[in-house]
Image 1: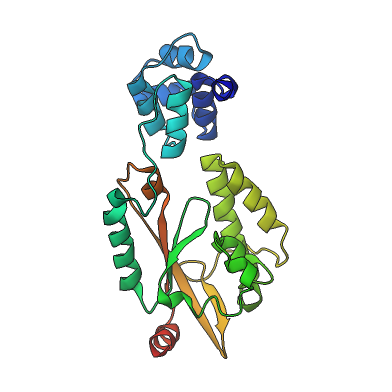
Image 2: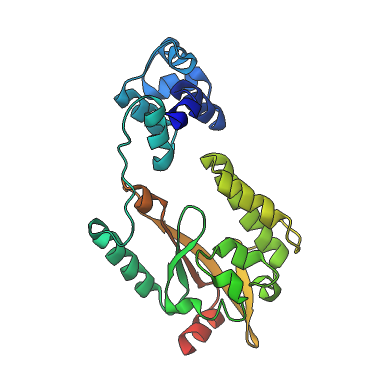
Length: 258
């Protein structure tokens, strides 16, 4: 009862998400196919939205599944999106798909991360990247962004650290804003305070590379991200597989040799 009393009304939450997406009431009403008057009444609490309306507006606003459950609870409805652990029998297909993708990328590094950028799994190709990383940064739940930018992590070996930091911090800051996740906001603040500088000058190539010293070599990577595009489970929706692919022939040959 206390939690229910402290939860903001659904109209207030919807208004916050609308403003976060920089949409006017008229914009959202038009996109959702409802009247601006009705949307105004929902946001002010003069009208109680149906379960379907809450889900429809959340879809238009691209609200993450976890927060859609919060909207439903605030409107007086039960959550509809389950959150299963990866060891749940129902998640066997997801685990198999993740393992298949990780293995397919070898010998190139690939990691599985959750919504908080915690390391969930990795393939064998990650070994060269984490050489020399302090043990405390690898203790589960290890955060891959902290591992990347921390002075006791990869940072001393990243030869284009200011450029890579600028890319990582911009990406994290945008995610924190779009998801309204306080943990991501706190992580962004923490990483911003770490040394290393930032350089957001557009690179000459097609993407910001990760250039990292491995032994006597400097390897160069471009990253790609794979997600479950049709997930209706919170855990599956929040999983991402980030692969680091060779940005030049030298890196490709060096990894194959290892």
